[in-house]
Each structure stands twice: as C-alpha cells, then as structure tokens.
Length: 219
Image (tube, rainbow, N blue to C red; front, side, top):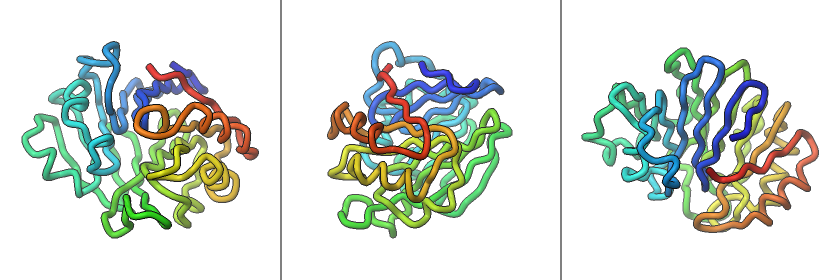
C-alpha cells in the first residue's frame, strides 16, 4: 500500500487499483488476476471499468470486489456482459459524461489508440478522472498519446507504459511531461502481467520530469 497525502493506493497488477480516500469510500478500477490476498474482499463502493477487454472486464475478478451496495461505472460497451451482476447500480458511460457517486465527482474521458488497432476511438472506451481527498486522479485506461489529455487538469496520473497495446514508456513519459502535466504524482501501470516489465516502469520514472513518479509493488 502506498499512502499519498491521505489517499491509499493499492496496485492490483496490470491496470487494476484499489484506491481509498479520506471519506473511506473504496474505489476499484479494472481488477484482473487478483492475488489471493485480494480475493473475497467484496468491499467496493465504486467499481470503474474502462473497456470490455478480458484483462479489464473480468467477471471472475470483479465478483471478488463487488457487493449489493456497489455502483459499477463502465464504458457502455461493457454493459451487455455485466447484465445479471447483482449490484446497487450499473451505469454505462461514454467520453464526456460527468456524474457523482457517493459524493465523488467522476468525469469520463476518451481512451484510444492512434497508431494501432486494439482500441479504436469509435468504440468509446474510456479513462476516468475522479476527485477524492481534494486530489484529481486520472486513470488513463488503455490509450496512446491523445489530445484530450491536455484538458485533464490532474494532480495524480495512472499511466500505461508497456507498449504493444498502449503507450511505450517513452511515449507515456512524453504524455505526462507535455500534455497531462500532473501537479503532484505519476504512477506507471499496464506492465508485468500480459506485456511490459519493471524495466518499462523504471524507464518511465527516469524520463518523467514534471512531477514525482512512484513505482508500486503489486499486492
């Protein structure tokens, strides 16, 4: 666990996080291949799902985090697969949407590829910007460098670094330095499970100049 200014960050591996702010609401993002210690917790107040690929929308894994009081906020392309899941509410979203769940403002932003075909813009896969403990946190989802990043206005950014399906570590650092420009912190993700290595995360850390960078241990 990494505690940053009152926010607890737990990296579940790949793009998966558990994040808890000072209101004690528990947010999960894209849980995938949860370790045994993270299973059967069923403590999610909010579950955010960026798109419908198996390593982001994993029914097997989300069953370990949801409960009847969970609200799921998911890209619209996920909704068909989530039918029958017993939660408080299931909200399908697309880029540009804004909502508030459990007093937490959530903004939905594009996430797409510009030089590869895995995440077409027309699919409306998403990233998330949410505010907890007075910090704007941006989870990019699976994306390349895109112009929409310039308007994010983030304090903390969670950014993929593996290449192949998303940005390389060099591209991710360029996105952080030139477009996202987080005021406080950048955290690399999307490595160590399917593609990407700790060396990618370290390369990203070395190249980011505009803010602190923290490489998290998988829990």
